[in-house]
Image (cartoon, rainbow, N blue to C red; front, side):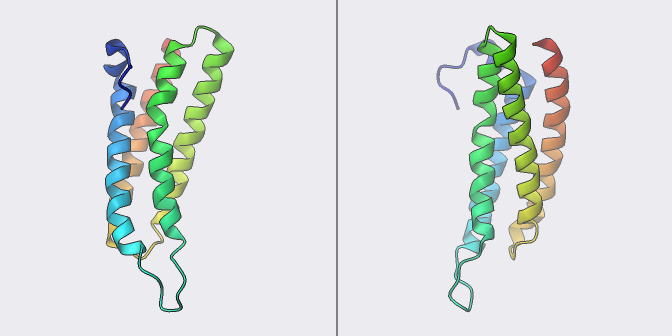
Length: 131
């Protein structure tokens, strides 16, 4: 993900889980896009296709926020990265629920993503205590 990530950071469980969530989100999005890219019978597009892109955009930002928080020396700046990480996680969770209402077979994979996000939130709590 980040080519200049120090090796000790890439070994953090929370960082590994962030990469895993990104990979899962990307796979789900590609699967959903195939079903959602077709136009509806009235010629309009399915608005859920935007949520599939959102989960990728949000998940790609998780690992850099972890690295930024780890590398930051000042506590107040660390807290800004932690807050951003929380927002991203919450938005990912909400968008996974929004996608579950889509007309696609790929929505069956969204509970897996939410389960991984729950694990990520638990890792996030313990990781924040180490900062």
